[in-house]
Length: 251
Length: 195
Image 1 (cartoon, helix red, strand yellow):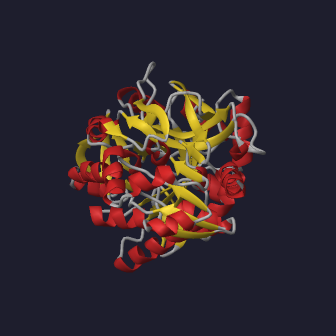
Image 2 (tube, chains in turn purple, cyan):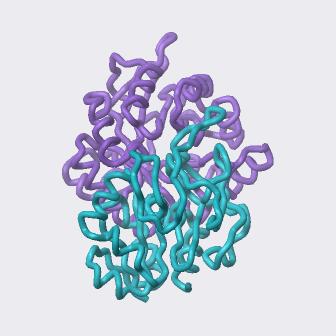
């Protein structure tokens, strides 16, 4: 049976791993390759490296990071942040990325999703969506959650699925950094309307939040950062807990 | 140990290359026939579209070379599928090493396609799985699959039971990515090297 996946997200700025609380106040959390290796040893199922540098210098660093990760890890990883054209996507593939995630660039130019999926396969393209619930609507935001857009979460998710996205990584800005649980209601709705896997992000604080996101939230994978980086939850403990709760995970 | 990794621009090969190197092998990413023929082992990787990949093999004459190889050959993911007779993906004739048709997954109860993530494998056969426990988890990403048939070397269940691995004579295939399957995958690659 296909296992539910636990994913650790490593935000990378100038070659260092950081994690913001609600996207602000970045804190140091270790070397990205070493951290990735440590997670792999502990049994993480997948890693996401998000480059939040967004400068040309930092961009070059990310290629070398991707290469080092591919050489040192034997689990799948996604690289995201600042990918704005197909050439960049191709470079990341050549350096060894298994998947890339696009966010702002997909909103600006949805055709990019279609082009990457067509050229490199839908398994290669993850579309990350940051959305914030404002009133009754989930409004898609770009630029690390700083800019609201005209787009609404569910219709946008459908559109990118049609364009060939392989997975959706949905971050609830209302939940991110608060450690009070995932946005299960919105996640369940996403899972119902889509036929591609949904990765839940934002809000993990307790082990029970993972159980909830897989049952109530119907997510295929759950992603977290701070609680893993700072040792609040150890991956082996989390996996054991989920097995006990009847969730199929890789142990 | 010299391992030729067949170079036909079929997606991400960095990880398989690095994994084999970590296991002490010398690897050469190559489309050169002599280099492939003289290697101790051959890895036939592949991610992407069957039609385009077959065309790329034909352009280099690799479609006729690969079936004649005598040393152990490991086809990974699309590489395994291309060793079969035919793929429903763009109705593509394959290399015909395995007389079986590659089929598209047809979801029965809302299963998501591609089959992506960690799934367990069982009915493990052949020395490729020496020391691997039944129900071990390995990493899959695919929308097409090889049904269970006489040369199935490992099974997996998603929508239905399908071939997670196939083997005949010196030809081996894994639908999953051993290079992405953590310790289990590395052990399988190590077993391949030892063949």
